[in-house]
Image (cartoon, rainbow, N blue to C red; front, side, top):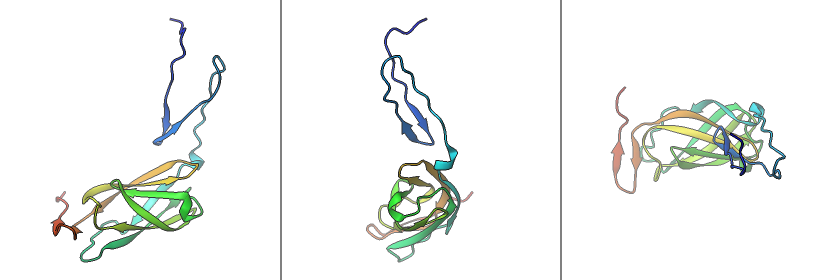
Amino acid sequence: MPVTTPTPVRVTINGVPSSCASGLGAGCDFTYASGISPSIATVNPTTVNFGAAASLDLVITGTGFGATAAANTVTVGGAPCVVSAASTTSITCTLQAVGTPSGSRTVRARVRGGGRGKAPVCLDRLTDSSSSRDDAMPAG
């Protein structure tokens, strides 16, 4: 069945939306370039326990990160982890105790002008000082 009206197609690769600005009938080509998507190898510490601390630093290692702190954005379970230092193989970010969800969460790194990478981390016994909440991760 021929298409008489152009239909938009959304292309998303590693969570990054792509777009095409060609005119009618010109078509679009998309190429996945794994070299511009970061790959997370490790997150340290792998278990975060804030205790009485208001914040903790995470060190993320891997490949494909932006060379400067400003070129990277990191979240843990959706909560921001403020990037203070970065190289193409390492990111250091500060995670705040208040507002960070406990339990098994995903660390996501996004490089400006590039892609996204992700890795799991366990936020064990997260202390939320605003509500005196002390949640432990379930066993198993």
